[in-house]
Length: 153
Image (cartoon, rainbow, N blue to C red; front, side, top):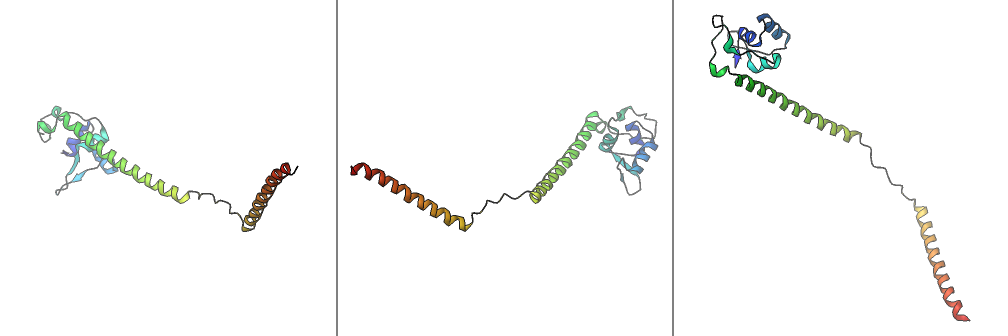
């Protein structure tokens, strides 16, 4: 629900000049109609001032526009607060998701590459082949000798 500056001041329990000052400093956002009249949303008042007064307690002789009962209930103010909080939390989640993606990208950029395995040089590989071959020949020779000598005698 939209309120004039005077209505907003009464709802917030502050002076009209305080509302005006908050608007000029950017602490309180507002809308302007075709006539140049500034209006403040209930949820915006609740965000800035947290606790609002019940509009039904206003002085009816003052220069206020009478409000309909169904629009001024505590439930309406609570609903406006919840909607404002919901918008804030959705924006926060969106920002956190964007941050998460940014950090993932940064981690990919600075991730250390896997350590390279030492490549055996080709000169060592043929040496190993010869040694393995010689070991096999020696082993076969020893087995043969061990088998032949007991049978010779």
